[in-house]
Length: 200
Image 1 (cartoon, rainbow, N blue to C red):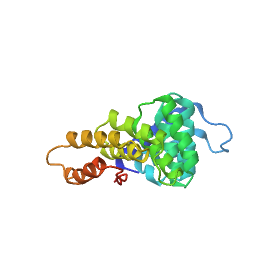
Image 2 (cartoon, helix red, strand yellow):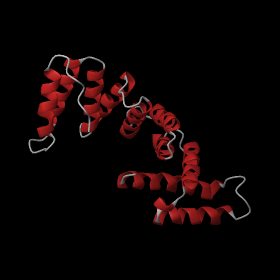
Image 3 (spheres, rainbow, N blue to C red):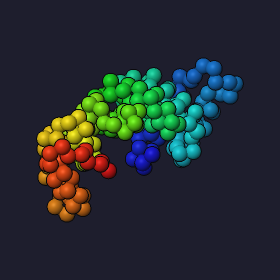
C-alpha cells in the first residue's frame, strides 16, 4: 500500500471510529465502548499499519454503513481482500466503489488489474475500457493508457492501439525517459499483424 493510500485509509478509519465513539456497536463485549474505540482511535492515529486485517476490515465495514455514498471504504476493502489472494471478492468491492463514483480512478485501475489477473493476463474489453477511462481522467496514469492500448491490440484493433500509443507518447514531457521505450512499441504496432506490446 502506498503512503498516500495509507493516509487515506487512516482518515477513513478515523471517521469510522469517531462515529462509533458516539453510537457504539452491539455485541463487542463488556469493555466500555468508548474505551475500546478510544484505544483503536489512538492506534489509527499513531500507527495505522499495525492494525490487523480483521480490525481494518471491521472499521472499513463500519465506515461503509456510516458513509454509504463514499467509494473509498469499498476500495480499501478490495485492497485488503486482494492482498489476501481473494481477487474475485476484491473485484466485487472495487465494483461497489465504482457504483458510488464511476470516476474514482484508484478503483478503475484496481478493478482493471483484477480482471486481467482473473483472465490469466489477457486484457478483456471491459478491462480495456477501465484502463482507458482511468487514463482519460488522469493522464499521469501512463501505465493505464499502455494497458488500454495493449487491450486494443489483443482485440485485433492495431490502428486503435497505435493511435492510443502515439497519443500517450505526445503527452509525455520531452525529458521523460519513457519516451525512449515508446518509439519501438509504436513502430511494432504500425507493422501488419504486429504482436501486442508488453505493458509495464
